[in-house]
Amino acid sequence: MKPSKTLALVLTVAAASTAFAAGSMDGHSMHGMDSKAPAASKQSSQPVPAEIKKIDASAGKVTLKHGPIENLGMSAMTMAFAVKDRASLKNFKEGDSVSVTFDKVDGKPTVIDMQRK
Picture (cartoon, rainbow, N blue to C red):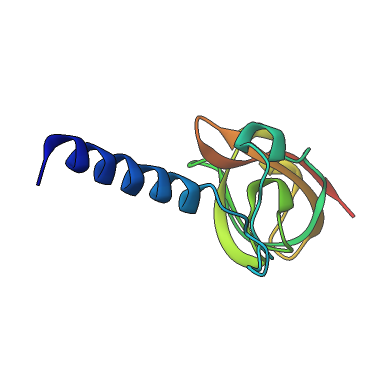
């Protein structure tokens, strides 16, 4: 094959693949896809209803059965969380119904505020 024909073939293949990659997504469902940048999609912290299952004051942790935590992308479950203000744990007991605000502290889900209902 002549060099000019080879070059033309390479350019044609490159142009076709670029056009294909940039093509329309018509007919393709994008349901459930988040098109926002990660920083733009962060939601503000909202109080979440929860029940205290266990308190470990010495470790600064509380185990909560909680509703969905939207700002952290977590579904309802029971799990232990670090508490930002460890001293506040003395104001609660197992079985208390509480309203809890969560955020990430040092990259970990953390209770930043907890109020008795």
